[in-house]
Image 1 (cartoon, protein in one colour):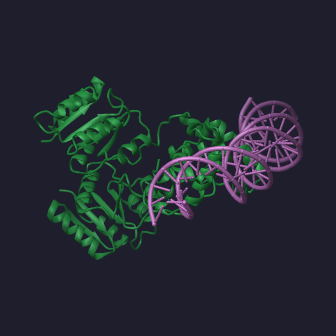
Image 2 (cartoon, chains in turn purple, cyan, red, brown; image 1 turned 45 degrees about the vertical axis):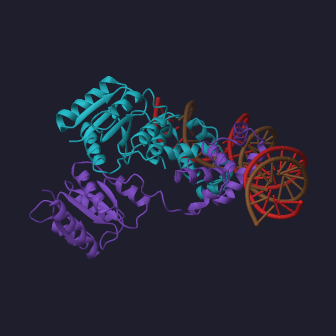
Image 3 (tube, rainbow over the protein chains, first blue to last red; image 1 turned 135 degrees about the vertical axis):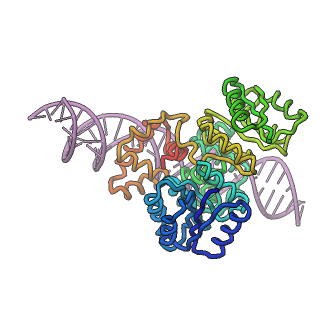
Length: 205
Length: 205
DNA sequence: TAGGCACCTATACCAAAGTATAATTCTGAC
DNA sequence: GTCAGAATTATACTTTGGTATAGGTGCCTA
């Protein structure tokens, strides 16, 4: 039966997850409220198979806490958990070699599945994570686009010129320019490249 | 014990995977060589828990084969498998509600893990997929970029204008234009939007 | 039927992007 | 020391992109 160490400074979060994993799955679970005490417990008698680190927790200092844990215990699988981190943080954590990233929005069942997945040697990453929040443009901005504007944006996302788009849509180049201008305004960006990038980032095309 | 149906037109691929899953994991595995015969077997006596569809296979017609399978058997989990598809296809498949996407570069062990993961109700997607091979530009094209050209491309990927890039790099606008021109040539694209899109698609920035 | 909206077009203008040629500096390799 | 390549800048040019204003059509709805 695998040993798991959960490090999170929120007592409620930490203890409920631990209780769930122990009672439902029969895992042996240890807990810690900050990185230092987590490192202490890692050095205990029983080797830990999986370490779950909260991204916002005393001692973490962003992702440097992840580095520290990996360096000190290279044999232990480490998963980063966070309720607030964005896609960038999650990707950086994976780049650093984390065995997984778990948003706190996971259901209990998915959490267990993810843990089992990691314990079997895979790396867990929710494929649809981070496709939500925006920076400049409101999420629903795409909905305000007219049909033609959507078609224009679609071609724009392949990197076509106005002339090519005009040919494909069977209209004059000036018309395309108008559509492009409207698209830029509605998405709140300042040129076609940004529009294409934004649409791609949000998986609109 | 779950029932699995593997549909792939490559006999070798299909049968070795099937044999592996049957002998090592004890799954009950059916096979098919194209979409039509797969649909036939789906209607057989034993309900299928998991359907694995090859993206390049007679009858698939891109992702419309996925639609067809999902529509006909909404209760069955469907995973798309491909050796050549790019990130875009994989994402579209997931958007359409596929329960997973498996590149053929997976190891046998990872394949089994992924299958178990999907069978337990999760959706599988290799988090680092798509950072490898290319479609239009040669893979190593980025490597041929000089330092300045890389820096230029990086800013280009945020949708900045030549003027803004020049300011950020502390050079004249003409210099940036030259770099941009070289980048376009080396990547084999015809404008800055395509360059940004390509770099993003390959997760170069 | 009158107004609003999406769509298309025209003319015109200015800014930005991209191409071409040439010349300078610096660095490292031969 | 010379040669090659990267990086830089300059001048000049053409094409594309983006904005502005104005007008036309058709369709739907109050």
